Length: 106
Image (cartoon, rainbow, N blue to C red; front, side, top):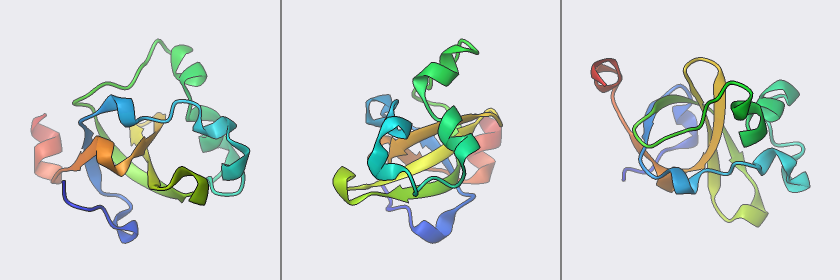
């Protein structure tokens, strides 16, 4: 996978390994001040997704809206938005970079 740089916010990625998703990252007190805002933090979890019968899956496309860098996690965590309303915290290793043209065709 090509490394995703912090200055690539707004870039589109495809989920390739859903096991790299952090479904309860918003409950980790070490990340309290790292979220872009409280609303996104509240929505970036499995409990919130289940309200809409949604679960992230391999092949879904999302836009990088933030990157959380927490020393305790040992790696940057991307916050991607899918379907314009779901926020997914996922390791860089769980996604692949795509071009916008690819996202339209998928």
